[in-house]
Length: 423
Image (cartoon, rainbow, N blue to C red; front, top):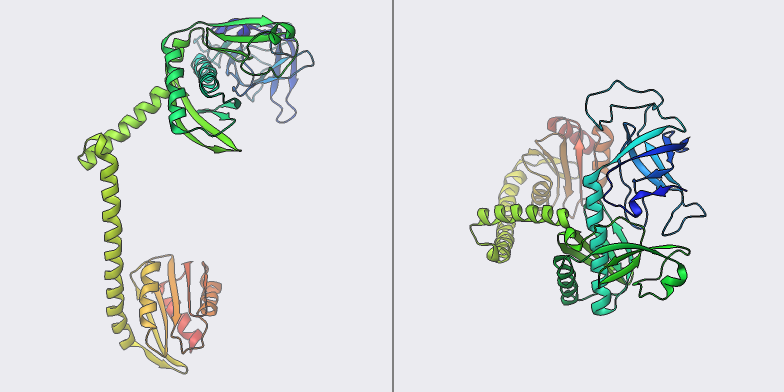
């Protein structure tokens, strides 16, 4: 069993410990270090593991081996996974304390110095303690239990037993932040299972034996093995940023402390740039966006009408260039247009009877559109398939109209090939 120093001192940033065992990870061969004690938190209970430095080597993963003796208070063995490389030989000193380049050889029985990544640890402490406060708010105000919790790299979530209204979410958020601003004490204590049974725990503990309780003064009491701040004020703030239906209940996404500040800065910068571009005050931004969307829809309708009119005018020109073939008349032309423009033009041409039209874009790789009038029997789809067999690309369609993109030939080559296939 590893003595978990973070259980009683989550603010401990560095420590010395004795190496009890060295193993190799069966998945990738990385070295796994077992210590007699550690300040590194292993992934557990929705909270990610700590990273940092151990004897100059980078700790990239910390795993709870979950021994039979593991419980909320003591836990089992903690395994520290070292970054890939050969840790057997020391490296020359770099002159910087704690640098991963100052590696010492790791041997069983020797004392090694560990340092956790404090910024990551404190962020996790803010998020995890904030989750306790927010979950207790949903429970106290509306009797809604938290089913699960996940602390992600950018945001955290709680899954609630039922769907909440917007007003309920806002009320819980406000109540949670009042607890933060009151700067209540957050303490740790250990109790037996019998003692825990007589206490008003917010949720039933998942384990038996000695339990580690996190007590937010007058607000929440829960069995938890995670790392937490010692005063609720250190959470900084709790901001609910999104919610959605999830498995019959609701998933609520939230940010605490530094994460909430960073998200505010990002939103502030985006909002500032938007109001400058639109020359409005922030409160007018939704209405301004709605006006832009309305204008864009009207312009799109107008553009489509103009494109249709242009296609009809150009179709007259193309029909005039059609040459006779055994089954009717054939139009071959390279056109500076995208796929939609080519299809619109081909459709306008084939409104006239007796026509087969092959249009190729002037851009490369080429686009091709083949269409036929309703009185023609040639298959547009088969012609496109034949062109793709020779020039590559992908496409499809029907006997009346087919298209393909990504053809590797020049427009003239593609048109010449189509001409031979049709005549």
